[in-house]
Figure 1 (cartoon, rainbow, N blue to C red):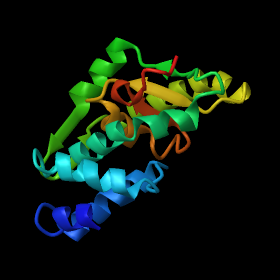
Figure 2 (cartoon, rainbow, N blue to C red):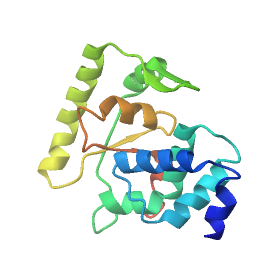
Figure 3 (cartoon, rainbow, N blue to C red):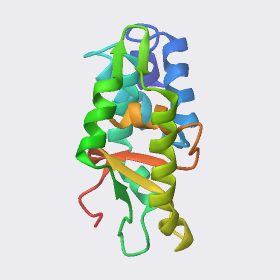
Figure 4 (cartoon, rainbow, N blue to C red):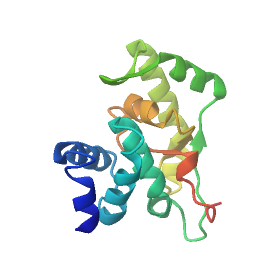
Length: 167
């Protein structure tokens, strides 16, 4: 209660907090550690009001939980990464403004990326592992937005969300 009282309404509005929680849920991130999430929002909201950046800040604070959901019993994480050329293409097509995050890419190009990613994660799924894509922290929201409709079960993690005890 004390953390909530510090955050709402002085630092953030209830609707803003609700928006962050909804975004986390859409990405299949548990909001059970609500105290940690509210604490992270309190820290992050002092630097920015951008909901995309706040979600990324919260996700980095939830790294232990995010890793635990996708790694195996030996703390190993099996995943795929993007080719640097493809990362550059996505970065060039990404526009982040006050109106939100937009990936301005021809539909055929986006479909091709999703099709290729689906092919790359299929061996992981066939072996019984979750489909995980590891990307740069700055690209994670754009890649998630790009793949959300075509690959809803794809877990998009950033390097900031990998804990030290994860191989």
